[in-house]
Image (cartoon, rainbow, N blue to C red; front, side):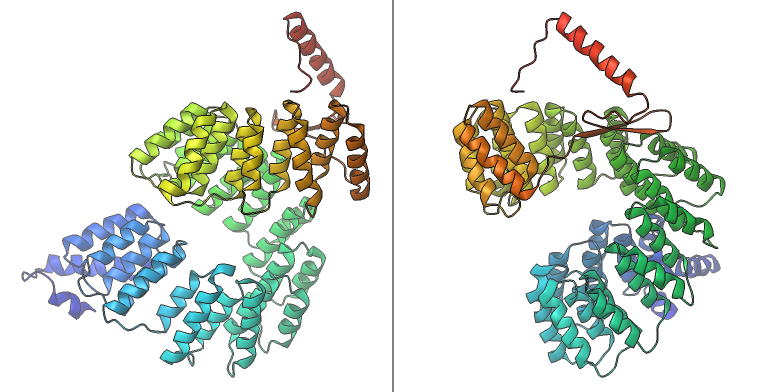
Length: 605
């Protein structure tokens, strides 16, 4: 490698030049593992200065490093500077696209590779398979499978292992192909067994996975952890614990899987017991338990453990910060979210795009739009997730005009909106009553941006039209839906029918409701109230019979608030809170003040 670098170097080779070159080579050695974007950019600048940007050894490492930081545009720029890319450079870019959820671009690179006369190798096909996840990719995997057999790479065990892994992620038909491939293999290694067992566990084929696990000739720690993870994900924590106790060797992944599994199951006592017993706690395990407490709204426990985590001076990575911030966002735990933000600022840690996005999401969901917007505006490297998080923050708090202005700014700055952008836009229009704007954005999705509306977009549009009294238009849109409307869409339209006393539209909606496989109790209750409001007692009786047959009850409304490091949860007519008498007394006083001010509630609102 050193010789090849010398051949393209400058003619003057002083001792200083040699030492700089050697130092750069040392930095390049593990560059593909580096996740620090600033450091990668510095090395890239040194590569350009040394005129090594076209080197066929250096380029793949730079592409891999930029890919790890999700800077796929920079990775493509590195590739484009290579006049005669070889199979290793092409493989690096194909892998980068696959790892960054861009399978279509991975195949475009593959086709470009073929048209350039560069022959694929076994890694080429394995990299392509990494991006093929989901039912829709099953025919593509079969096509790759055929290419592999024709090219003669099937004998390399690495390749069929990749096929088994890809097939097992494609639903029942894919799992069937994975089984057939597994059974036909004369030679299997631990990766083969782990891939097959992992596929079965993901498909909830627990008994078959357990049987294969028992038949496995040599179990490494990955096999045990695969089984643990499968049991934990389907909530079979008793079986997971039995397996955990039998493990000859446990690593931090084993402990983290169990702690996470019990946290998801709501058993924080077992989660904490295992956490305390773990002999070697790393940042992943600490993050798992803190996130578990945060998701459950246990403020004191989550905050105390986070403080201990800080005192232990564990090096927080992006994954840890993002995980805890996401839990804070979902539970409304603003205090802990602020602690993390303060910790980041105090350490002078430069926020990555992902961490900034998590902070924006946390502040927005906790109702603090000011701090969220400040972080957003200060970001040096925004991505579409950044724009979506801020836009949805404005939308959920009723700032429709600001959301629309932000969208215009997003497009002006060259960012391409995605399906989540339009969910936020349509929600903003709904909460602010912007019907004309909502129609414009909804019908521009496919025509202007090539995004086919999905059930979430249609639901937002039905809700927007219904709230503003455009019930016939909303119902016609519902009828034109290519997919079956869900209970949420039906509920929003029924709620609009009740508000606007639209009994006839409600009757039409009820046809959809009664034909649905599962009748939502809340929607049936709404329909009953609409009929009762209109004096249609026969309709009330029919709906009541339907509710009785499904034994459904409308779930009570719930809310929560954080106060003095404690989450307070409330349901409708709840009297379990220790200060419920004071709370209801305050509500009575508020209602009395409203009446004295002249407010008269409307029964249909």
